[in-house]
Image (cartoon, rainbow, N blue to C red; front, side, top):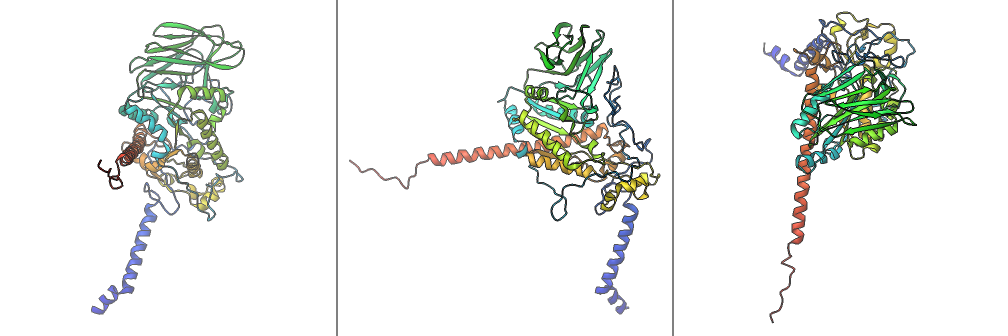
Length: 544
C-alpha cells in the first residue's frame, strides 16, 4: 500500500495526474468553446446568436438601413425618405456574405511589423489627446466661458437614430448644462427633444448613395418646388433663442418661406453661381417651418437651433449608409463654412461597421482616406480635439449554416482568413457558424493607427463590450443589449455604451484638471522660492 501511494505521490505520478486533468479540461473546452459567449480559442474571436431569433440575416442583398435608398444609383425618395414610424437603424443589414467567386479578394490583413506581428500603435491618453476639449470644458465649468462648448459627431448608421449620440449628449448636459440642439440634418429623422415632420413632395440627395453634390457636412440635401410641401421642427424642451436654415443657392432657384411660431420670412435662393446661403433669425420660438414659395425649387442643407446660455451644444450627423470615405464627397467650400460657423471643440468620428463587412476592402487605401478626413478636420477646426470611436463587436452567419451552426460562435483562425473566399464559395462547414467578418479587426487597426498618427483619442467600443463574441453575449442577455442580427445594439445597449464613453471622457477630464492644479501649485511654489530673500548670503551693513 505504501509503495503504491509513493508511486502515486511521486514525481511521475503527479505528472500523470496533471496530464489526465489537462486532457479533461481540453475535452470540456472543445465541447463548450463553440457556444460559450466570450470564450477565445487561440487566435479565434467569436460571435453567435440565439437559436430562437426570428431572423438570422442570411440574405446577402439587403438594405443596411430601413431607409428607401437605392445604393445602385441616385435616389429619388419623393416624400418617403423619413419613415413615419421612425428609422430602424441597421435592420436587415447583411451579416452574411453570399457565396462569392473563388477569385474574390479577401480583406487585407493589418499592417505588420517585420517579425510578422500586427502593428499596434500607441495611442495618446485622453488627458493629452483631448486637451483642447478639456480646456474648453474647464473654462465652461468655472464660468470663465460664456460661449457653448460645441461637439460635432459625424458617423454612419450607428448614430442616425440619436440613441448612442443622444445618450452621450444627455450625460454631458447633465454635468455641464445645455446650449441647445445645434446643427441638424434637414428633416430626416426625429431627434431627442426635437420633433421632425414633413409633408408633400420632397427629394433626398445623399452623399452615401452616390447622389450628385454639392453637400455640406450633413451629407444630404432635401429639395422641393411644391408650394404645399413643408418641413417642421418643433422643440419639446422649451423655446429656441435663435435658429438658422442653410440653403443651396444657384441659377433659377426659388424662394423659401421660413416661419417661426407663425411669423414668416421670405428667403430668396436664386444666385448666379451655385453656393450656399444661411438665414439666421434671433427670436424665441418653439416651431420652425420651411416651405417652397412655389416660384422654383429650393434645397435645404441643414437646420440649426440653440439657446443663448452656456453649456453643451451637440450636433450629431449620422448618415445612413455612410463610411469613412463618404466625407470625401463634401464640397470643401460648403464644409469649411459649416465647420467654421460651428467652431467645434470636439469632433467625434464613428465609422467602421460598413467597412468591416466589405471583404474586398483595401485597408491601406482606407487608412489613407481616414488620415485625409482627419487632416481636413484639423485644417477647418484647428481649435478642436478629435475622438475616433472604433466599431463595436459584430458578426455574420453564412447562409449555409445549420441550426447547430447558428448556436456556435468562434472567430476565424489564420488559415480560415487566408482561404476565406474559397471556403465561402464552396459552403465549407468550417465557416458554418457566427464569426466576425475578416475585415473587422483590420478596420479597427486602421482606425487606431489613424488616431495615433494624428494625436487623436481612440475609444475601443468592442473592448468595452468584452472583446470577441461579446455581441453574442449582449444578444443573449435578458433583456438583450444587442439584436438577433449580431450587428445592431438595442436602445439599452446603446445607452450603456454611451455611459461607458462618457465615464472614460470624464476620467480623462478629471486627470487633466489634476494635472493643471499640480502645475499651478508647482509654479506658485517656484515663484515663492524665488521671491524669498537669501538670508545666508546677505551681508550685514556696518553700523554708522
